Image (cartoon, rainbow, N blue to C red; front, side, top):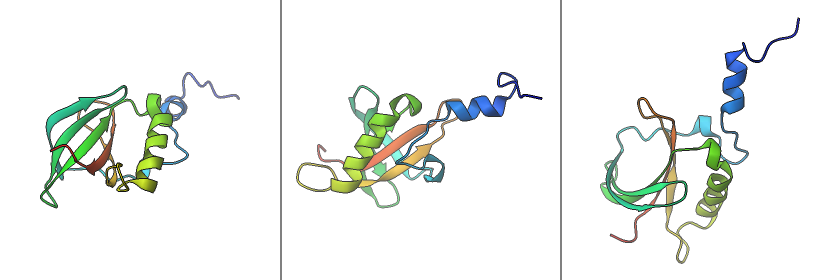
Amino acid sequence: MLENPAENTSHRRKSMDPVSQVIHLEDLPTPGSRFELQELLGVGTCAKVYAALDKQKGTKVAVKVIDNIAENILEIESEYGVLSSIGGQSLIPEFHGTYLHSPKNAKKQLWFIMEVSCL
């Protein structure tokens, strides 16, 4: 007997998950309470950037928060490639890592942590 995809919710859920050939989202750490988001620094086409405190290191960082992971996966992969390969060189901010945040009652967010250079 053939399976009805409309009745199989696990099949539907898998097809809606963002698929990345570059970043293994399921393996990313969660930020937990390590970063305290502070003032909004800017808004782009697919993300907001906040100044934040890295409570583990006691330093200021910039946190790029991307809400719509599935819709922006190509841009995410491209930026991740740039930050992870040349971050910290010349005019590119130093890259401190990628985290997957799961806020209550909201979609998962991808966080890029970078040095903050404007504060």
